[in-house]
View 1: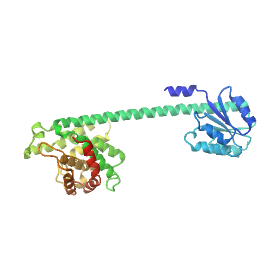
View 2: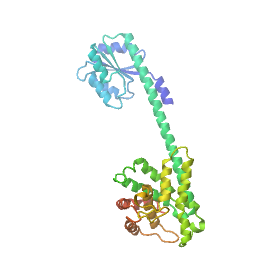
View 3: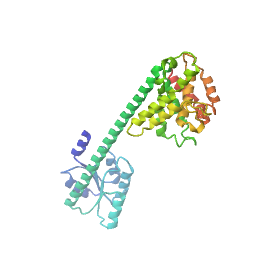
View 4: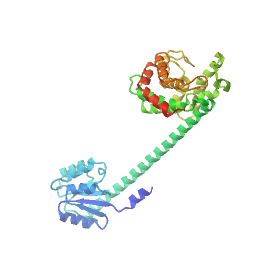
Length: 367
């Protein structure tokens, strides 16, 4: 970390503050052979220098000054992020224990009484600079580690998302007419989830992490189609009752495949659990007439309820070999008519409130 080396090697920068020129001269002559020294003869000037670049590494601050005294200067320094961590040593003619305690309570790191003793001043300055150097090294190291963790997490997230879409597109290649179906339904689910985040029935479930996991998992809803024979999956006409029963198995096939992936993992993976719910339950209906398990009402996972509406809406507005695309307004009426039968009524209400967003998503990711 080259920035760290520069901080270690740079000559420390010390600001001395006193309204008496003779005191500034004494401290300056003592410190200048070793450190870079700047001087200020008032609290206001001290704050200007402290807020300039580069900031001082240490401030020797007189307490008793006209106008803004040392306590006022220290309060201003501690109030701003740019200066709050600069160590301050009070230098004062007051030698009472109460005065020293007050200074330390205000945030000073040390307290030197006048008349100064050179050896004491140099020793305490060196100690505080070494402490600051150690804090800076630790801070830079922590910042580096945080950046590295964030980078690796982002990298892992990207790999995870790419893997999800690769798996989802595997199913899509078996059913090439779906096109941007994955992206649209993903954004529909995200939109519904955000709309319902503060709804009393959903707020406990739909925290920010779960909303993101829902959107991440949505593209896997039809992964089970890889297990459906081509003559059924790609049939241009209506399926026979026997073929339809086979087609319906894609929900369970997908759920079991995801469940196996989760079982193979060394620890629980939240998005896989949600993906399993979505794959198995996105064809369930609110009134219990869906498949594969004829779940009804609250038995259906929230994730699957959101996916059900997103999937049906997109199927309605998109052309298939067996049907033309339906106008948006007609699809809207069908969704609304399915409230309480096919869909959770509150999910439909969220759809109604976000219909303009649904239309924008459909336009953005049109075929």
